[in-house]
Image (cartoon, rainbow, N blue to C red; front, top):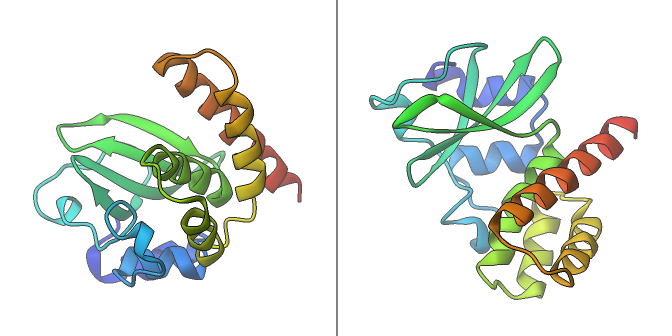
Length: 167
């Protein structure tokens, strides 16, 4: 794990946007992000073990999870791991745009007003917000359950990652 003193520099070196680094530092760029997307991380530097593998730069904690960014042989990854089971790592996205799709899906689920979601998306430079929202609205027209939602979200993030890498 990247040490706390160099964490923000490491995030920038890994290609994190200025708004993402600001959030990771504790500078809330929009009130909607305050409870789920705001650093600095606590658990990472107070007893939680990091997953094995490449060094990671923690972004923030969300409950018992740590969100982080790391570089691997295949490129960078936005990951999430549970502090109780750090070896069980979820690769959330391969790009920051995909990562924001993941986080905004959570915010959408909280019934945040659309205008607030859009303003928060602008604040973090989530350029694919409209594409995410259109996919979300299409998904909601289908009968589904939690596993179906998880599959849909992974597919949507993968599509956003692919578009972002191609741009």
